[in-house]
Length: 464
Image (tube, rainbow, N blue to C red):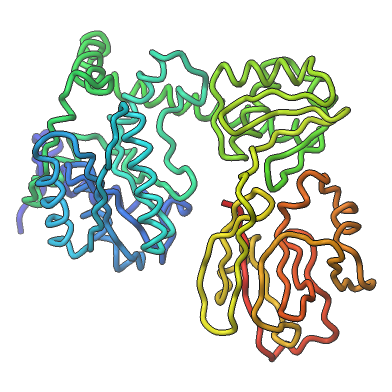
């Protein structure tokens, strides 16, 4: 039997590769929300060393964690060989036994931000088509360190210094604990070749200049400890940002913060008791809840208006987002879609999903299966349904049967303190007999003694 190498023996690529595999297997149970067992995972696959390592590491745990894997490659169309690289990436994925979807940029003329937006839009669409619950990205520790330095050069707060998050919604990054070179050693040990993208060394891009210029220069002073030191800075910044974020949530709660289909509202006096920095953080959180990220200029404009704006007026704080004052309440709301309503009709058989537009708000309607206990879903007893169902906005004369008797929707929404300006965007589910079955987020039709053994119809309406 071969003796293990002595502690002083230099580590080979094979040693590093086996260590990477073992650490990856140990890391996932420690972060259960990252890739839960039984997940359907879309792997963002460029074919480079990081994404190739991620793909094969996930393949290694596919059976034990019951993962369903699909890959997706986005061809940015940059350079003469981009189409060939896309074809090769698809082949590398197929060799691993994972199907690969290909997307391509069309007529993009902007900078890196435009290509990044197009790439993430493609991944979101590919995720929807694949029915995936997670999108796994190949960002690793060196990317994390470079992001911290880039944010520092732009001037940033704790959130920017925290670098790349391990999870943001459905997008996850399982490789942040691994360096680029050790991932390459893992691939070398496995005898796998990856695709080199010439754009990674293109000095026109700031990240490339930081990677090949700033990081080596700083390493002359910090030595090999630079990356661990910057990663430690990011960890402390993440902890500090988390603490401030928790405080912002508590402060908003004391101000009566309530989400609405188009944004949120809260008491103005509840914010004025805090300093400008706290108000700015609360405003940024409200904007994020509505799907927006505020610039410094938008944050300053919003905080100034919250402090001194008059009732009946407002100010734009982002493209499509506005903060307004109504007496002693502040409202942060998205602009309504000016197009007419797009209703959804649902037949009796099968399951499906379809987009709806109600009162200027956009929704996705799903039916036929109830996924766990998600807040957007409900189950209606079959005895109360007359098909086809229709998902639409409230109409004059609408009533819903409650345990205490029939009630007008206008009165119900008034009791639920839904502002009159937002009531047209509240989805309502009605049957073919025009009876209101569900006022989404507010009330479900009361049915006398529903048969627990009878049929139930699952439906969900989630804001997009």
